[in-house]
Image 1 (tube, one colour):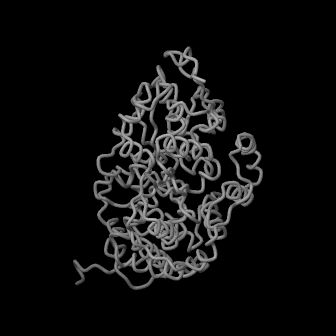
Image 2 (cartoon, chains in turn blue, green; image 1 turned 90 degrees about the vertical axis):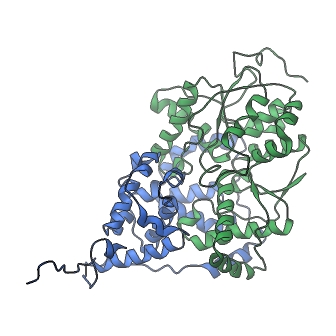
Length: 217
Length: 296
């Protein structure tokens, strides 16, 4: 008789790998482990000024994390819509650093190269980082030019009127300024660089492990 | 009094007029700003979505440079302000992270001490000049102007302002200039930040909500303390008007522009000509502003 005995379930290997990667990133956030204290009260979603535009609300995102659906989170538009206003973080009764955890999810997504379909907002972050690494400072004109050229050059046309009026007001600098210590910065950043490995989407392979809250930790 | 000035990338770009007015007002009040030599981008909120460690290193380099100067850091962009504060907080609380970052900085011959504090220029004005002294310097009161203060997200979130400071305390600078302070319940609601550039329709909606409510509260002017909020709130007014069929036209000066106007500084020095939505002395029909000729 096997009554009362539960067989341990498990998550697909690809999901487990993503989960491990995310937890590593979340651990870089001091206090990141508090994600496990979520009450599912929905204060984050209610406070979020952009939750109306998200496919997965912040509360639901934590629920999906618990249920072992990191990939779905990484493929959502949600993490790229967040405007970093920190309202959820400030109001969370469990002091979960939701905004910081969204950064951790963004990093996991970049690392795993998992992005939402037809929603290339992540390109902005990439471009921004490249510019800063090259010049030591950001440059608005280059940032927007590169972003829109990669995304949809036609959209540049829509930006033209604003660009022109800023130009007329002398509020556009044409060339980026490179700082003197840029070489040192590159050396410093190289020392801090994280490895970026391309990832193939794996077929679900089930491996040994526990199921339920214990499986998703 | 002298401070280390951390402009941030935008003050050298689309927010030149904010920088002009900041220098003009600080000079007029006898405060000196010394730009941090060879500062780099703080990483904003964007860098940490690519690499957390590198993001901390970037901001820590600026803090290490500021440590060498030893003066309080004035950061007029609230994104820079928050990122520098966050880095200081994390490095102060987590020894392991600090050791890691310090090792990385050492390869560039720098060392993080965490001695200097980060302040927004409005904190400096209220603390080191004070409302009384500021009031005494007002030459052209903004009489009759209804002004809503808009502070945005990052000045008081997630880190609290310094001791004795609050958004309520911030509000005081408006009546000091002779203007009417109009209560604004959305003063720390998000303007969209970079979302106005990436997902236009979402960003525009956030800006629209703020502008609409300011107009509804009968404001003549909406004053901001962050260069990105300033750009967001004024750059899209035309599009929003067409899209939502609501005339939301309102001047959105940077706070030092407004203070400078009341101090009697020239339009040129304050970069008023660089605003996309012009601000004029007759912005309000309620007060004397329209009838009182500006002193030569």
